[in-house]
Every structure is written in C-alpha cells, then in structure tokens.
Length: 159
Image (tube, rainbow, N blue to C red; front, side, top):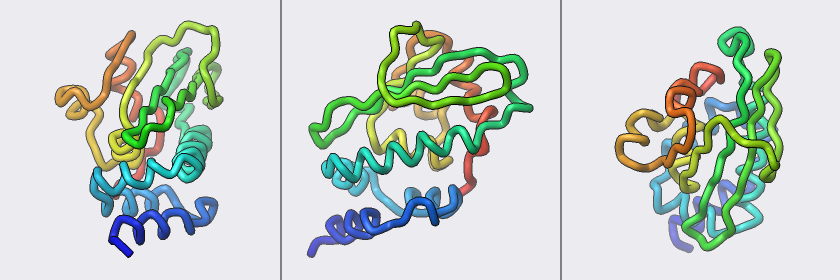
C-alpha cells in the first residue's frame, strides 16, 4: 500500500464529529498538496470532507466580529481529481451565519474560487488568505476587501 493510500484510508476512517477544528488543522498541516489531491479523487470522501468543513462554519462564526455585516459569499471548490466543481454559499446577516450547498439565484458579494488542497489549507489556518491571493491560488470576484477580511469572522484554528 502506498503512503497516499494509507493517508486516504486514515482520513476516510475519521469520525469527523469527534475531531476538533485544531485536530483537523494538524491533520491538514501534515498532508502535502499531492496527498490532498489524491484524497479528493475519492468523490464520496471529498463530498464528506467539504460538507463537514462547511457545516462547521456556522459553529465557528463570530457574530461579535461581524457586527452588521450582510453578505453572501460563494465558494467554488474545484478538484484536481476530475470531480465536478462544488459550490457552497455562506450567508451572513443579522449576526447569524448560514451555509447551504449549491448555487442560488442571488448575487454574491464575493465569490472565491480555489482547488481542494488550497481550500483545506485556507480553512484550517494552514495558509494565509492574502498570500494565497498574491500567489493566485484563490480567484476572487467581487468585494476583495471582504474576502481579505473573512478570517476575522470565524474562529480559524491555529495548527
């Protein structure tokens, strides 16, 4: 068995409900971009990981930091594994964050497009959003200032 297969099997066997954001950040930190891309080739596992990450956004939201912010943030996550693009939307309004899978008809204030590996590195605190933008790892359409400050509105783990 290759190391990548072992990594994929290890991730596939995780009970995500029992993994803290800090533990998840350490797991992601220990993975290479190639290993994450290999994991993402398993469409079912990829969908499970993305669903877990996005479901936690509501719990990690910081309403005190968001204040009166009202925004629809569209996330377009693409896979090197040939899976179709996955879209989630984060709606922040009235001190609440709600996440839904899929693309609505609403116009987003900002759209962020990035690959699986870069997305996981970003949301786990293993990569700087500004650095990712400067290195063209994330494509931003719309309110760039909002995109640059998104990490203020969520408790991002420190790996």
